[in-house]
Image 1 (tube, rainbow, N blue to C red):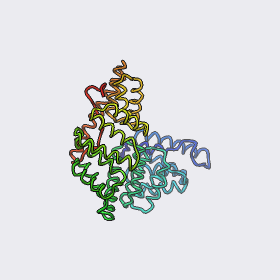
Image 2: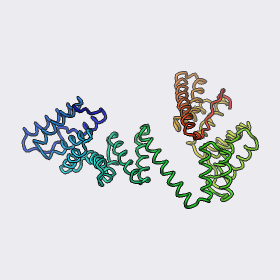
Image 3: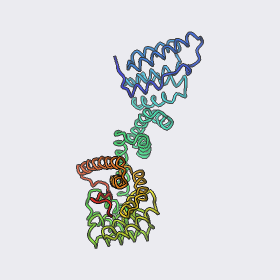
Image 4: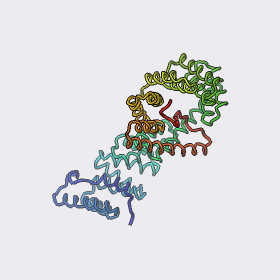
Length: 403
């Protein structure tokens, strides 16, 4: 006997008819028999006995050869078994009887893709955005995105992949496919840039960003400076150079001054931003200029109230001043803005402890430990890939009450 997994069982059951949805029958006795067969098929599927369910659908079609829902259900079972030829015949018969059966149309698209038929893309593309069943929508979306990718249509593949990430952000297969598409799209764009403008300032900026990702800050700084020699007004370059310079030797006063100078130039060229103000705040902290750092965090928050670095930075200083209620407001904002920010959870846990809220403190500290362990594992993965992990400005001081 062939069995159906639980996830596929749900796919079939969502198509099972209810007594009020059958096509009109010529006699009440026949209608009653059809309803009985549908009910028995539903019971068979719940027992994970698709073969018996298939026999019930055959019995329905013997009574009513054009019953669209019986064809849909039978097609779904054949699809699960990998018999796309039989499934396609059933889905087409179902849609001939009732063109509104969206799930039948979607699964027909899956079958047509596996059979290599040209109409697969249009069937999948037209049904994907309309599906409400999450599991089927994910499955159809993956089939559609894969088809786009195989056909070299990276733009549509990326858009579909992003829709799938939004739909199910923790699905490992979706995340893998998304990064595959984005990497391919990035490589294609880089190749085009290298062909069109190999000696351009933007090409130098791209090289610098690549070196930053590899952890080679000295050579990255060289290429940032080259790109700014070619185009002193290149958007984004002054900030990126400042960040690379400061990260290279954050405790060195001349390095701090050079980074600060690039940030001030960035403000003149492009205007101020929360990320520039937060970087200036970090430089001020390295200089032990507490007041200047606090003011920079205030400006950062005014420019962008959703900047988590500004939120945590302000909370840090407010905790040190004993303004716990104000600090609590910013830290709650921070963990909502970025639930994976370890420093925000750490400081919130510390603040709850100061405010005599032990249960809340324990919860935040537990979250902090879980996030820290996850990021430690991420560091190992990046090292294995010979890449530099994304820059993190999180700070976990021994005495978080003191800025």
